Image 1 (cartoon, rainbow, N blue to C red):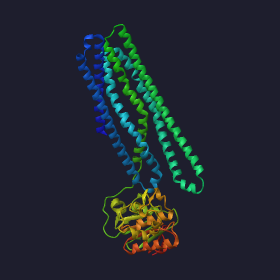
Image 2: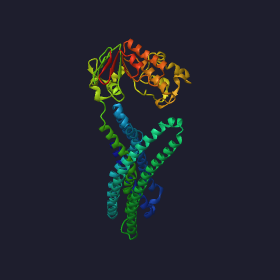
Image 3: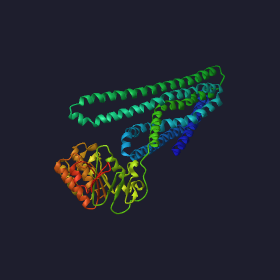
Length: 520
């Protein structure tokens, strides 16, 4: 960011120098041609015209370079902020992320794009206004102090109106970003529920709702554009009025012979350059305000959210033994520990605490004598395979989803253990069959088997299952539970959340979340 600002300022200095010099040279050439017939020869005009061409060329090249630097700076800053927001979001406990993901998604996918205008247009215009405007005003004063007085009176009106417009657009930009977040989340919910609505024959209502959301978004966008156009119109009128006043004054004094033609032309050529940078700043101000609002939302998200703390201690070598103080339980190698209890009591939260994702309960978990909160989470997660209530599935092939968390040593054996081999036999392209977000293209039971295959085929030392037989029929459930028991017999530490009798029956220890050890 600092290098970008320095480069932008340097480009602004060069542009200002070339602009003023070219105006002075052009005014001198035109005045000589009009007043001195001897200077109209090719030999006399060639040197100043070459100088003028060189100045215009340098200005064009520097403008291009400034735009290139602005694009690079904007891309770098947007990428860095996006990385910080995503890092913060992915470090949050799952329950907190569920409530904050819409805000983070809007900032990343739409909001920060507005920052590009801030870097590519607003900041270069601002630096140019800070350099070119006062320098041009000084040169005008050198040639014609009366025109400089007119400029000094008209020029402050533009910043004043920019401040007034900024006070209005700041609130509007925040409201637009909030509206965008609401509309996007509602639209995503509707689109995600379209398969269910279609199955129930209720798609007409969804289409109407989507049209209403689209109309609301259009109204919000048009209101924003209305403010942008009106603000640009006001600034253009002020700038045009200032240039017109300078032109009228110069014209009257040229008629009465109160000033030289060179001075008059120089003042006329430089008058628009005084107002031009500020006009660009005003035109880009509203668009930049959207980006600044998004940046403020990004920093607010980064600063207010508290990612789950991670330790730095290495994970002890050897088989994994997990001890939990509340409720009291010990999951040891070679055993299946079943965790049961009524819905909402915190079974899934306990698994997240064991993973180190939920800081509120991580202090109650000890792994091989070391608190899980003190472990290096990356090393710890490499030793754990987790099946959540809803298996994580991404758009891609079936094989890519099976190997989402790393390659499986024996992919075919993993599919057989989870009864997913029967599903593969029905898919048109087998492992290369493409599925959608969340497993669209597969039934709930098939998605569950895919998630089971991913965990059962993992070489991890600790296996965590959250309702592993949900959406499975009786025979498939029996085969899956046998495969889970075999992984424990092979030396893995297995912790299963469940409440149905078949799941409880494979447990070497069954612990109720209310603190009651049902079986041991």
